[in-house]
Image (cartoon, rainbow, N blue to C red; front, top):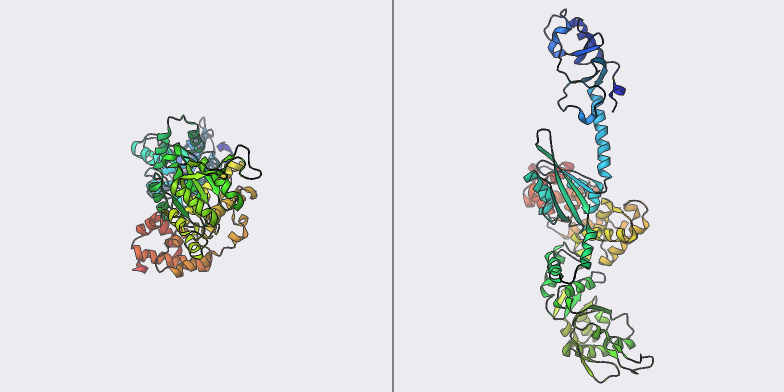
Length: 585
């Protein structure tokens, strides 16, 4: 930076031989508390107004010169300026010659301009960047870090790194805290709740001239692609891979589970996966029954011995269903293959057969299907030989089988045979805590698939949290893929949402929730803490919920812990709504 271009022309100077009164008049007219002192063109120092109090105005300036003042020669970079500048002006002096002075407010403006440019560089970094102070409180995150984690800057800045781990937002220990404790750089793999993305994080200490740690800089790079290499690992590692799969119950393949409802489901799934008992998966269309079926297979002993074979009972014409399931012999019917054909049950031998839409199975097929389940043997269509099989059956349906039994459209004996271990998968509207992580998962998936780098705005996430998703996870996946493909902007905003989602009445939904729950609705309060309230009715509702929460938990810290934010965020909301602790006692 060329300081000569920023010299103030209206800064007066005095000669060392001038009287004090002249210097005082110059300071008064220029509204400065100090001015440069010269001897001809040579710079000598600065004279301060504070040193002239109660002095003889006819004495000479040379008696009161501060010769230890800070100067620049015009070649220094702005970052090289001393931190101890306390003067209103900084003289520009080169080879003893005075060229002028720069006012401190101009330097301050330059520093602010350089800081803004530096922040732009950080925000446009390919890697995610997180900066904390010397105690672990987050000062800044860049846009890439927001995209990797789907965590809002408003929520993270001011939060402590330990809080991120304690709340489960960061799934591994923080290398930033290790660096703060040891003063050394650390590198480790980190995974995030909202997206399931694996990153390589390097935390580096930043020290001042005295060697004191003042900041920690964390560089975060997405390394999810490396995890795909496990598919190419040699066959001697299956045991290790199985252990890794079982270590993390919250994310297995495409299972994203952070709500207590889904964690309970997965806990049962992992508990019964190793058995050979028949499983009946119940739940609405699109909740992920097939995905749960895969998890059951992958965590069973059959994973290494047989295949996971899936068939939709409602997609095969009834007249072909028996031949498809049990196979047929040569000449069994017109158009049959000469060599016959192996059925789906035989294909799944030693493995797992996933029968989707089991409620669509015709009554005449239910009898034959029951025999195969009980005896683990079958006879092909047109054949006489009994074929032994070893198959575990996982059935799934979105229909009410008990009602079908009462109506006579489903056999009672088959129902009891299937209903050994029933597992009900809750609809997405009943597990709101899974929505944000699912959004992150599918956003990353479709960005990679279609070679985009789209991001969801906070307003879009908030709106999707209010939507009921009648099509469940399948509908959420379709919405995200549509948004990635149709939105031409980098950031997906409210205007890009489908009408059925964008017209969802947020206020009405919140009021219904509030009317139906006498207890404090933490979901409303949590949503409130992720951004400023908008709209009169919504503000009143959020304020009322905040007051109820404070009354129930008794302290700001406990409220913050209950909704998963820091106490400073709760204090900010209290200030926004004008709520004080005295007012609720």
